[in-house]
Length: 441
Image 1: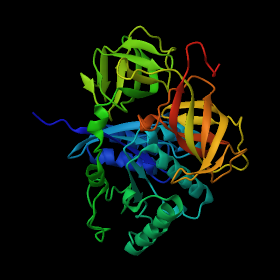
Image 2 (image 1 turned 180 degrees about the horizontal axis):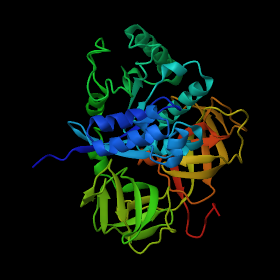
Image 3 (image 1 turned 180 degrees about the vertical axis):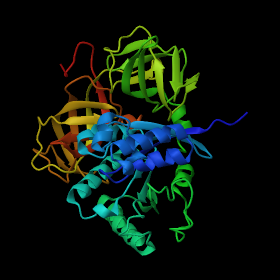
Image 4 (image 1 turned 135 degrees about the vertical axis):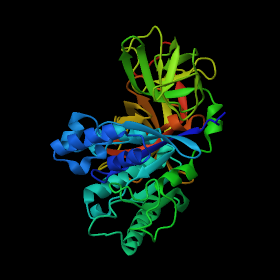
């Protein structure tokens, strides 16, 4: 009997037009996940739209609006296997208008592929977005960052080893000195997404000077060593979306963050604390008896309307550490990019796993050192960009969040305001409501 492969999640991120969708689409073609009939149809569509250069991107970008505008709007998931792992790879939007979808993808991932386009190094917009993505990665729980330097086939680069090494130095200074990533956290490699060079096999002709791993091999070598520990924890599944399917009923979808979900199991959905039965579940249209940590799944729930549950809710074990309603929580927050003073009463939107909920800064508890957590100032009257603080946060609507010491994937959040990420952090302690006492009315 063939040994079951461990599931891992990979997210592909980057700014607009860096080649994310092309990279994922080309990989799927090279791995035989796209039939020749489908490719012929895509060639026809891309030619009719006069977007031949988007041929492989159209493998991922299926919406009419995406193809007409040449952008990615929604998350798409694709599946393949390496020697050791069953991989779910997501293609995310590059434009800030759709950053909520990008954050969802990052928060679900074990590995992030941050596609770099050296032709945009001098762009202030791209630089700001790169900083924003790195800030999200730092608190996301992503275990490794693969940084492919794309467009090595461009005439201004022409597969040059010298130029590649200069790009690596430039991005290394940025990642390690400015962002603060550990050197062991980041792996660079030269690629041409459109030509398919160094994606699933090493290019021996154009870039014969590069002798390390290709992208597929890197994913396989990094993997997800913590999967078994996560399998043994109580169930937690942040819901990415909820569908009503004719003949089946209400079907939530999401990635199993912790624990296992069994066919026929009872679960409790937070924050409304609705307990339901799960008669069926599947992954990538394959029926399952049990779904383990790391797997993206859809599951049918009985006796509940699609209007009663929504994106951002969390499916939990009904008896092992069952969920409770959150009243407020303490969090460690790093202010990244805010133009003014932040005081008590500030109410931005928090992106927590798949949820997007406004939360009020109810109390500034203390300013602390980012690394040591040593208290610098008790009860500050305001905090500024660059500060790290312990803050009491009060959700304005029902929200399920966990503490970082118990379920770190469900504790992390980013704070968005003025259409940009202004802060990030994680919950350190959760305070649950007494029955009948709800501060988020």
